[in-house]
Amino acid sequence: MKSVLLINTSSEPAARLMQERAGIQLSVITTPSYRRFYADDADVVVVESVEDLTQVRHAALEIRRRNPFAYVVSPSELSLQAGGYIRSYFGLPGAGYEVANAFSNKHVMKQRLAAAGLPVARFQQLSQFTDASEAARTLGWPVVVKPAIGGGSEDVFVLRDEAQVRDLATAELTAQLRESPYPMVAEEFVDIEAEFHCDAVVVGGEVHFAAVSRYFSPVLKSVGELVGSYTLPAGHPDAVAVAEQHAAAVKALGLSDGVTHLEVLKCSRGYLIGEVACRPGGGGIAEQLLHQYGVDIWMEFLATSLDDPVTGVQLEPEDHLIQYMLPRPPGTITHISTAEDLLQVPGVVYADVRATTGDSETGVVHSATFAGLVLVRADSEEQVQQRIAAVGTHYKIDVHTEEG
Image (tube, rainbow, N blue to C red; front, side, top):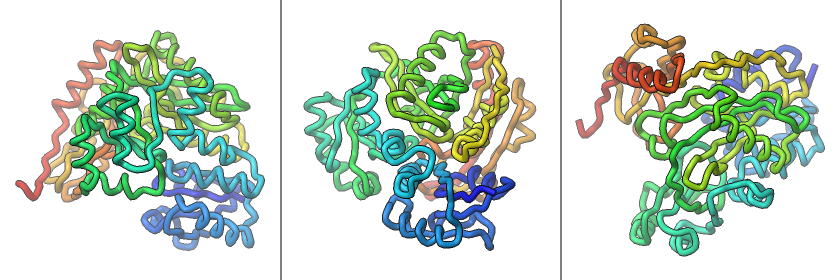
């Protein structure tokens, strides 16, 4: 029986799998919004925020009186810091705070990568939003401003000039970024030719498995529109280059055991490392990896977190598997295609429509906003584009907004 502390926010797969896993005495630290992921009789301590490390420490001390946990699992972007902190505080195995911080704090991450000689966009830490204008004098306009800690495209802004900085400095649109408990990072704007992600399993500091995929288009340009990616065969030139950068990044940031999600930008200067996290990628990446390579990235994540053996069997396909995240515009859904509809499209091997008629979405749309997932096979990159177009033609969603 292994005693485990799960520190989690939005990761439903981790919550479900940890509760289903045999031989585990599980305790959980989470926030009010995600208490629903756990059984009523589960050992759960709710804190206002897992980003407040003092709250998390107090909760962990309370839990240890009844469950002296030997392992910590921290699967969500916002719980990475807390997981590293608690491991370091109690002297437990796994990624300590220094490593967790390097994989979640974008400023520290880029410092470490640059110090190792790896290519990254030029960057500068900001103490406040209006510092973006000063940063642009060094980095040039436009600049990309984002929180040092956070996932996806949420609270990421491309600022074109000083006038836009002044306008957004008091706008409701940037309030969450300006009020976040983290510093901000400004990066030079890169004219991206292509964007890739590499998802991997690391054991003993070495890459055990790695898969490279290409996004349909750069994610920041795709927010509110079509987001997705397709796998590349291991020998594809882009896959080789990205996999090499991934291996170097893992060593530079000091990860011994875990899973990673790396993003790489291809531009006129070559391949630049964007960001890398020590958790499974979001969207439909887990399903993509399972169907294409036979690798269950969530099970591998738990295995590396709990010092269990990882899976040794991996496929080496030469075709492409597309993960197509179904667009979800803001408003109330009045009609949406069913999974059965989408399974009729040529090449579709999996369809999961998660949104339903009557669902309402009024928040800001970002890269994690989607209505469901479709996986599609293609024999060539040319056919990838044809398959994407076919799904786009068949997928229908109608929404009602206050504007009509």
